[in-house]
Figure 1: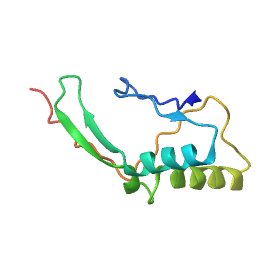
Figure 2: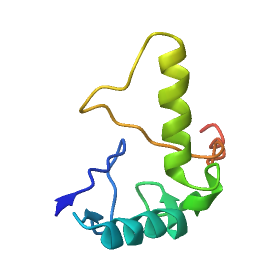
Figure 3: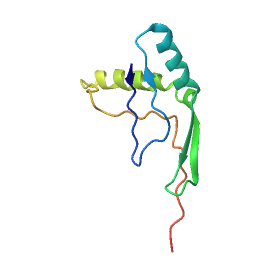
Length: 99
């Protein structure tokens, strides 16, 4: 198995998703991605937003496929090591200005 690399500006909490070599295990991971609940919090653990994996075009990988096809149409491509963070909409409200 290999770990699915996940990253964010200030980090991601939770166990990494392991990608099994067998088709049954891979289907399980795809279901976990679709059904996962994501909670976005700030440095003080105050909630900023969140949602389910299925909020992203029905499955987060659908957004990655769309991106790869759009890049290909422009003569570009995703490269190994690049990070893709699919989401369905901006999930964070702007913070009030400090006075």
